[in-house]
Length: 290
Length: 159
Ligand SMILES: Cc1cc2nc3c(=O)[nH]c(=O)nc-3n(C[C@H](O)[C@H](O)[C@H](O)COP(=O)(O)OP(=O)(O)OC[C@H]3O[C@@H](n4cnc5c(N)ncnc54)[C@H](O)[C@@H]3O)c2cc1C
Ligand code: FES
Ligand code: FES
Image (cartoon, each protein chain N blue to C red):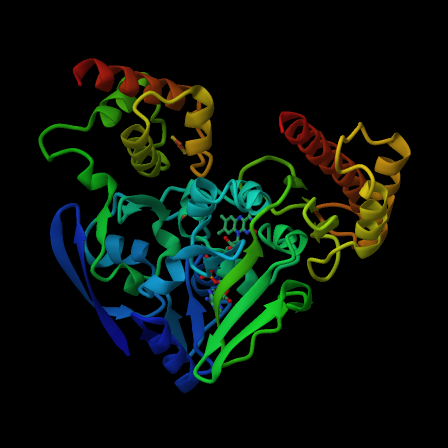
């Protein structure tokens, strides 16, 4: 095995081009488990933790660019206002030790259907910025997940950053699990209200082969909210219930040790109703405050 | 192929040779640098018994590749006291009966030490959240919480 340790993003891309089989190593919270248990023996490890560019985040034109290696702890502490859904989800990841190391880039790299950062990126309509010696690409997050643990990254590419619009309204994330710390979600759901565009964003976790959105639920709710954004009242029960049903219908869950498909669908509709109630209450109080 | 890794551990610059590229920082500390305080239980980030400070932050040493620690500043449980005197959190763990078999203790000490550095007067909820990544099979955690509270009180009265 080789241990490659670039100190700039361009050097990292160069090394990845020379060693397309090298496994990128960031926080190591997925890769090291595989190495420790002999599940993976890559020819080379490409350590990204000495690449300063990957740890930076910035704001531009109403958007956020979050470096691939920025750990969850930094997202929680620094981005809770601009990317609330992602920050709430980050709080539910692992333990303090894990959150200090683990990154959104690693979550995208692993592309697990249970990755906690992924539903909020869908709901926020994010983009993945990749980099290689031949240039950069921006992949819409809705096109990034191709199958269980399979993403749209090419062998010569690295994930450089994720981009999300700065939140224009409330966002939420909720997951079902046996306890708060250290659980793989049985299912999870993220909701983002975008009052500036009138659009709704959703993201479902752990209930399909990949993280995915619920487009019918989004369109239904956007239509229902169209005349309600200003001077908002409480939402009628049937709207909240129908939204929950449409979110559950978008899932394609399986039975496994963590839960049955039926339970997941039921739990998703509950999470969808709950996050809608929370975000709408927050939107109403913001409108009243203005 | 192997690599050489040099880092500062508990204030001393140490070098490990013949390190396998996929080897963890935990293995290097225990098996190559003679620092067996950090424990190896799960090797998958679940138990926290391998917790060390890396660049001033708590991490699971079992999930850090040794090569990633090149040039870094590492503090293990061996470095919490000054060699003569235990750190306050170590004293209060002993006094509160927070140690039974002791396997989880080094990781918990490093985590609690870091918590009290960041937040000298933590609420119970903050303590629980900070220790969520450290498992203990023996104590039921109550005495561990007592020890952290007592250390907070003692440090604030001596500060
Ligand atoms: C105890 C424990 C608890 C956990 N709890 C959770 C949880 O609650 N929720 C959750 O979602 N996950 C959890 N995880 C999984 C893991 O922490 C996350 O998936 C995390 O986001 C991975 O980030 P990392 O930086 O550690 O990735 P790494 O392990 O370094 O890498 C993960 C994958 O991404 C690739 N990769 C990393 N960076 C890049 C890059 N810049 N470009 C291209 N490819 C890249 C790697 O090659 C690898 O395939 C947990 C893991 C552990 C050990
Ligand atoms: S041995 Fe590292 S967390 Fe258990
Ligand atoms: S004292 Fe035995 S595991 Fe904690």
